[in-house]
Length: 307
Length: 315
Image 1 (tube, each protein chain N blue to C red):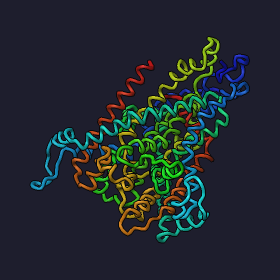
Image 2 (cartoon, rainbow over the protein chains, first blue to last red):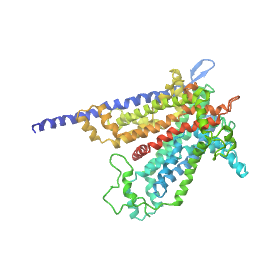
Image 3 (cartoon, rainbow over the protein chains, first blue to last red):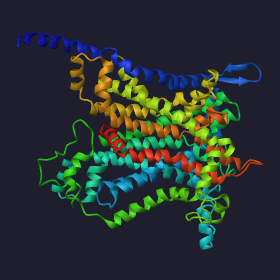
Image 4 (spheres, rainbow over the protein chains, first blue to last red):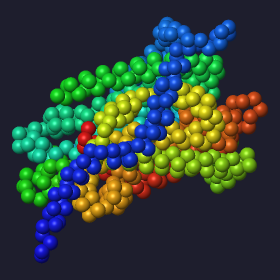
């Protein structure tokens, strides 16, 4: 009609203003609420704990600035390092086992060779929905000789299995609980990554006559490297934060679990039983730094191999 | 061998590349499914071992919740006792100690609705902004939030407690709800999802039609984000429903306990001098605690699985 000109003009003026709009502060309207709460519950506590870590409550003189004394104390604290070593050992054994099983199950699901694939996928994932408290109580009951499965096995076969809650085995028992909780979650992460591998790659491999194993090592694993690295980093962070399982097991295995069993348990004890808030904050910061450094190294290494 | 991709014979339908927008994973495989690889009994059996491992504790929990306290000690763990006491246990769980379990359940619901609901809301808004807007400081926001993922949240808990106690927030529901509102993982997932699921041309079209930013968001973008929202909602729900450490340090008053803390206190009760052992209630209460989440995951499968898949596209 006759109004061909005006719309075009509107269009021409609208576009640049639109561009400008999108470069403007409009986005802050959407991201602002997140950032505000984030500042309150993430940044402020970090800042506050750094502040706390530089002071010390003294009997004489009260709250005084002590510089890096708390850090020096933490670096020489045997209780702290025993905990770090323990979670380090836990990490080196439990994480590879958990991620290995998760990866094998994900590959099995993705191969299309399973009967009842969907049932497998959803069932193995289910423990993720179980709270750590319930998972730990459940396993603790089953570990027990009173009405647990260990007791049943002992009775049925006339054997006496070692007590999973004894000091020697408690770390392995905790590892089993954590593995049970998260194997399905990691499996799902890997499986989701496997599902989006472009089909053309498989077709090319088939033309080249590559076998299943070769497809896995040459196509599937490299393609999900990102997911593997992310899962590893999350597992490392999780291991270093270990608290729930040991603290819930504590009443059942008082001799095996000490109040400085993991670094996180140690900070908790320092703060809530010892009232040493400043030192507790320091230990938390040191542990956070160790975690971040290791996570960062894993990320660098993982990504470099991919390039 | 015949890998899952055997579509050499039909090059035209279902192009193999990843789907352009709506990140649904089923589509590219549909064509291949017609020529499935052979099923393997051996592989099914091996995977079955993992299945047994994951299901045995849950089966134990279901069976044990049908037993009286004496039955728990007398009967084998994976078989029923003499009395089928499930209904008695459920009734007693809800009425024991003046029905404190109901109180804990309501508290948990409060924390989940406000905490997980709020976290999802903030993550959706933030992820949308990161995906579809350029604004000053965007890179900084992104870097800080991604960096924060590596900060152990439990390392933050003690300082947060000290800060909140200065602000007089400890021992109130806010002490549990406020920290639950931030989910860096949720923000990341929504950012990836919004990038994929909302075509920028659609937003521009809406703007040219004169729709305001809020209206565009609610009318155009929100429906497209539905699978991502369900995914983030489910995962934040799990995080808040299962939260233990945060309420443990923040709350002293059992009246504000969530289920997780309450169950643990029932269990610990047997260890204290003169405390009554109520293991049957701990077990039945545990079962009642996990059922809603398991039901949610089962019922909403279709949504969260495609949401997760979209999240892994970008990695």
